[in-house]
Image 1 (cartoon, rainbow, N blue to C red):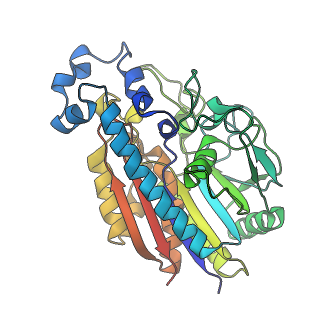
Image 2: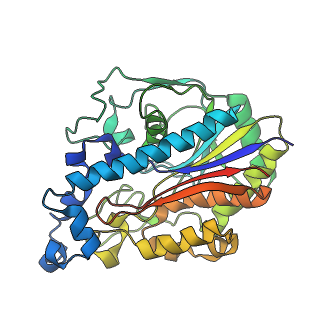
Length: 357
């Protein structure tokens, strides 16, 4: 029986920016004319949020937030390197990046050959680094990673999923994106945050249509508050993604390969939470899911509806549903996790390391 490692992390785009610029998402929200003035008044914000925002519009808090995130990325990378996988599979959202109006699969396997990933040549599409924001590493357009693929394993994976009644799409080359969408690009960038380790693991990206009904009409991003939307069809449900994860675990458990499964996303996103005026995440909802995760209550995840995820701005947590389904299937042990709470920097971030029993 092959060994499987489960990892969870964030691909928070503003981590690419300086501390002074990390609050750009809330800065943008504060300019939204659809949000009433009293909601934008920082004096009316929760005490913890006021403290984070401070007198420097979050710069000092951003430094602390960055330190916590980087420490956790280092810990996840150490677990990955110690495991020495034959292949890495990453579940991440595609936010109107590779898949657009001509095709939006519920989920798919990118069975690519080796590709060159240039984060800053097409940063708007990959790392959320548009609008002239320099990256924190001061890297230029020639910075790149050679991402090794393994088409044979990817084809095996897709075939076995289809045989398991998981009708997954697959692709051999990018469609509307030159390399990898930001959920995958940023995961790799942050797991090599100090730029000392590189990325030499064969990687299979598994994009999920997390944004569902707003993936086209809002281009998987921030929409003005209260704007009437011509919604698209929904994303797969949490239960369906857990089923995908369980099938994935069975397939690789019976394979000859050591496989690392990674969920790439933060949790509740402020810009998706109407009842907080798009200003802060739904931390209470995140805490409920986190408690269920750490206690091994997979049933709560399984029973949570898609509408509940959407209400809490947890669309991207669908990536974690696949991971938890896989961990449930193999009876994995949660070796370590951390919940990095924020009231200002758009989303709470969760990290996790699961070991096969």
